[in-house]
Length: 314
Ligand SMILES: NC(=O)c1ccc[n+]([C@@H]2O[C@H](COP(=O)([O-])OP(=O)(O)OC[C@H]3O[C@@H](n4cnc5c(N)ncnc54)[C@H](O)[C@@H]3O)[C@@H](O)[C@H]2O)c1
Ligand SMILES: O=C(O)C[C@H](O)C(=O)O
Image 1: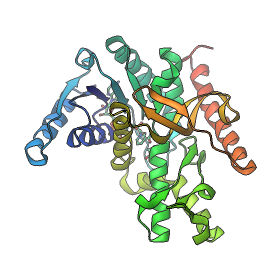
Image 2 (image 1 turned 90 degrees about the vertical axis):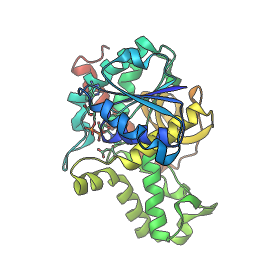
Image 3 (image 1 turned 45 degrees about the vertical axis):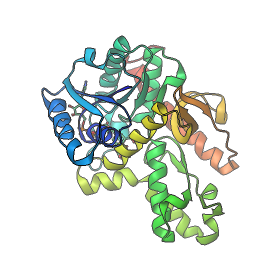
Image 4 (image 1 turned 180 degrees about the vertical axis):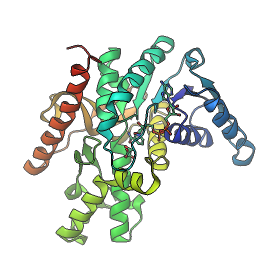
């Protein structure tokens, strides 16, 4: 099984590193537009195999899509990350054309491919990948909710002094500082509602910290995060290639589900070898539905930019 990772920068290389060291795919191709960059990162990772004991093989290439032929999955991380003080949405001007071209190139050599979009603004990039490629909706998945949910669990675990592994908690909606919706009232600690251990103020603090999780790290590091994003992308790839039927929140195309249509946005889905297989129904309170609708409005506004700028035709 071959997996391609496009973009050998911080997130792409971390995704590839997680894939090789955990033997998730036999063959990984790391592709970047910067001459020699992916080749160097791939060699560096291969040189850890004798130390870590994996058998996967990773090859780096400079913009050579022939090398990606026959890939089962591709993870697209190519594009620019934000700097402190920026929003993810400000990246659209540069990243839209990169993502569109990369998708075209991938499909040309791997017509049956499942594509996982990481580049920001992720929900809009996922919508662009779907609309520009014409691929079946189940084969285009946006990675954001898996990361945001992991950050949500981290914040709850920190507050409760509990293991994050004992928590069940998801974030739905757009992958943006103001659009994501951490569902605190649905969160449980091994089936016990976390609300029963937290004050309203503590819950609000957890939700706020989760929503600005990416911005907080960007301010600290000077560029956006990569360890948890890479781990989240690799976990989703694993569920595809090992047909695990894991439940993640992911940005998928809605056709009336959750009261929305013609949009890619984060909802709970099952991920397996078909891509995203099905949406898992979830009852939202009136307040949660209102937040979801507002989040969809904001994502749709970003999607409109694609049409206004002529990247997509109506
Ligand atoms: N969805 C998420 O949860 C999430 C999480 C983290 C980062 N991101 C996004 O992922 C993207 C990458 O972040 P990063 O920190 O890895 O950035 P980075 O700058 O470290 O790496 C990006 C890489 O993309 C390459 N690239 C640019 N154009 C290309 C093209 N046409 N073809 C192939 N490669 C190309 C660059 O050469 C660079 O190596 C950003 O847009 C960032 O905002 C999303
Ligand atoms: O914060 C960012 O810009 C990158 C990514 O979307 C993240 O959440 O880490």
